[in-house]
Length: 120
Image: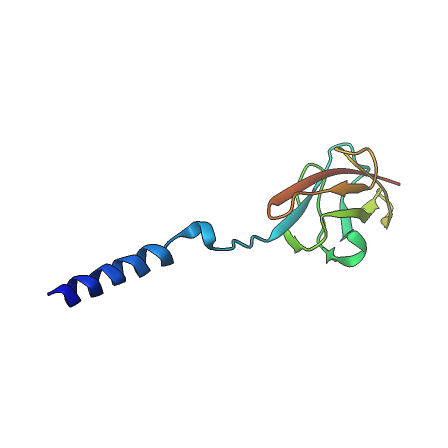
């Protein structure tokens, strides 16, 4: 009987320890999406984050809309894109709403959205 109580107590102890979530490491991905401001000269595409950490390629984002989210590794980076000024897409001057420049910092382990204004 003592052996059985000891065995059951041991099982409860192991079960309690293995379900302790405070010792588990939680690794969350960092995601980034780009919102094209209504103040941009037009639609944007060829969006690049942090010198190629993420690339949206040919995805076109109209003014006021947001790109798909991409998983990124860098939490500080420069945003580049092309803007359609009515005569085709060309390299844009990018200004992020939060920093007033083309370089921003995002939160690691979160889903981030950065609003930019793209002008020719």
